[in-house]
Length: 183
Image 1 (cartoon, rainbow, N blue to C red):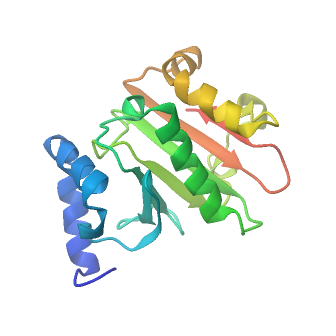
Image 2 (cartoon, rainbow, N blue to C red):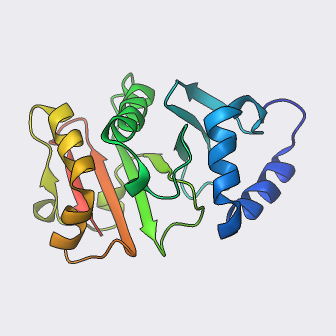
């Protein structure tokens, strides 16, 4: 943990962050005052901040938060969305290991500020997701992310889910294509 905050304090603040009314405050803090947030930052840019999750679900559980007040991923511009994905790839670029990016939305989103989870390992395999059920990332990845961000709502609905309850899992494996799952 950075500075004078302990892990216990960070976990209590994370618990407070789960209250729906606190989302705008969190977004404002990340947008304008990220240096005040008591987290172990591992990457930072003009568009996003990445840090280790205070209550991790998996080893190497990183959160990436856009530096914008945005309650959900639907509030992000395509540029904001792509900046977060680029940061995730940059964090894992030097590793030959698999990694996953997860976005939860609607009632699956605990904190009312858009955020992305980055995990090491193959979460799709751990969750038993069929490779054939994932959308394959085309060779021009940047265009894919722009199209996905611009059409997120339609993609969720086409997958049989609703914007009120969805998870998007992006599985990046060193030896296969990138797969995108709506679960």
